[in-house]
Amino acid sequence: MNKDEIEAVVRRELLRIAPEADIGALGVDRDFREELDIDSMDFLRFVTALDGELGVSVPESDYRRIATVRGCTDYLAKTLAQRAA
Image (spheres, helix red, strand yellow):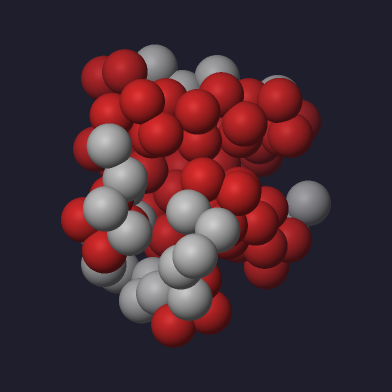
């Protein structure tokens, strides 16, 4: 899975959490929790959805690394690549 495909998954799952949001206008380096007003429970649903969709379990200690679209995409791509190696 390439980074574009991973980013599409990230944006799709964000849209499920915040259906009223303009996900296309969301900057890749902006903290989406703040931009989309996502509370901690919604963020946990997002993390759980990523695990279900991609099979990547993100430990709580890494949550800050997945707070932006780019950070989340990079983190997931790296984790998936390590698993495939």
